[in-house]
Length: 225
Ligand code: SAM
Image (cartoon, helix red, strand yellow):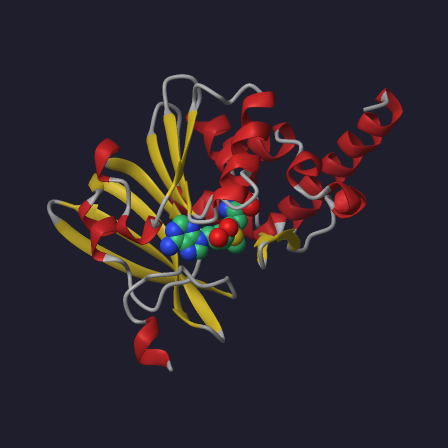
């Protein structure tokens, strides 16, 4: 990429981050640092790179989207993620949020991210490798509503697709003192829900209203017609 183009993406990224801070979506230094580090333009289709720093979701093929940067930032804030943690992401999509999570989790942490569409998983994995996240992020093709038992328990779980109910396997795979963030609700809209496990008890708190694509295979969709 020509250096003048790269400089203009960096400038657009800085502008977006300061706007998201002003609007309250970015509150911590960790999330700010990660959003300033990860080049969103590389995770969107080439013909949409000019829109990479607009605050909106963009299509990434296979009927799926990369979430708006404000939502990616806000979910990461709710996750209270810190260095060294083991993280499960359900819904790799473009791989962008996996890169944001891996930037914060650092070299001592690890991100496992599950995607059901093999082509999206392959593309995300290639970009993550190219950016140097290869040994800190494991991309898995599969049904994330079942979690990923092989590497459980997780300090943090981020679900970036909507589910009518919180999938039980994800609650089981959350570590003690763990935090999960998941959009819970029907196809018309959901509520970002923060789940905490403390002393063996599970606590739920509703946060922002959002709209995500469905978590395919999650229990409860069949009741919704
Ligand atoms: N985090 C992504 C990013 O940064 O680009 C955005 C995720 S997109 C809104 C939701 C993703 O969840 C889609 O790529 C979709 O294919 C995936 N998905 C839906 N149901 C799934 C399931 N049961 N298991 C794994 N991935 C699933």
